[in-house]
Image 1: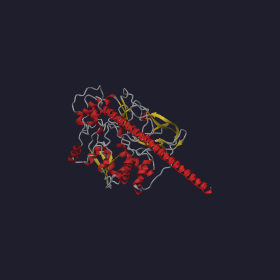
Image 2 (image 1 turned 90 degrees about the vertical axis):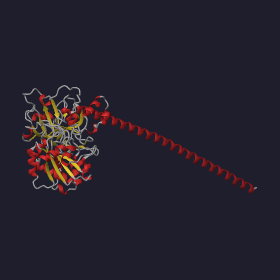
Image 3 (image 1 turned 180 degrees about the vertical axis):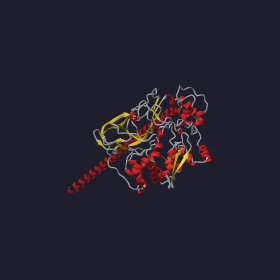
Image 4 (image 1 turned 180 degrees about the horizontal axis):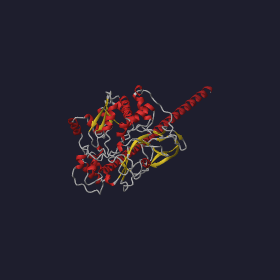
Length: 512
């Protein structure tokens, strides 16, 4: 990339920050495969949308890849057994969430054989109809592996319907500490490119661009080596800048086009998928393999052997840490436990929570890496405004949230916040801005649900009143009809009697 091109691309992207990436030595360690755990704990919601519904019972024997959770609704994803074994429980398990609250899930005791169920393979995916590819991806429960966990089949089929012209593969991996996408491209570049080609066929896009940040030279070289001779897929080296992995910002840097506010990439003819998702799509379409494992970065100063590990879904994060050597003895203990990256990941109270489809990292950070102190008052320095990649006013939004004026916060563009954490990262007062914004969004969502519920109640009440009024009207009309019919019948009977009497009188007079 030339200096001018690099400058122009960076200039398109306002805001953002440049945190230390902390990706090595984890990124350079050889990829490892996690051995089978004794038990897996599989939540029925691991994706955006409606939770899956359990389709097995306690005591059932399942095989690896067998569907154990049925998707519900248009936006949902199937859940499959990560290994073979017996279902020992269906009920609450600890959620991989800061709250630590329980979620419904399925617990499987492994039988140690790891036997696959019968799979629906395909020798030539490019001979399949795009709709059939979408069906296979949906059956495999594939979701976006970049963290959002949006059901991939919905985006594939939606891209075809929206006449998408460009497929963008998000391989930027801008979050500090995480390197699972980097390691995947180094070790499984051919699989990734095959998956991208299948996605191209499924979406009907003319070309694909793979956006990789320039701090991953080994991944760039590996992908370019596999792409020799490919004309429709190319690698685009992009500047290292957080949050480059944000969908809208990646599109802006690669195309110069901006996704409209509250719009979708498909509105401008683009669809974005993560590079790890491409491999999952390839496995689903070529081999019929459901998404039952994923690459996870285990990193942080407290980890004895940082690296990237292929982990069965449902494995406890603590067991993955133990596989990586556990905690270092020369540290005072972890200051923070995170699932995902330090900017957008979830802080959890314990690592006794399962790895799910969206878990890209398990971070055990020490006090120096966390670098937090007591929060102070806002000094209105404006650093958060300059860092915001969306062009918002975080200090104004936070002031409204603190005052309990969430509607006014919404007026300052709260809905456009992508929760990247740039504002909190640069704040000299260490104000937990993103937490405020999450709280405000939750409050607005709760109010919207309450408003919708009240409107639904009013609608149902009106409908009931109209139904009762209609029933009363129908009853009155029916009574009037019955009364009229009875009166007509009585009149007719009286006329018949009178007529019969007259005839009798005539007959009597004649005989006399």
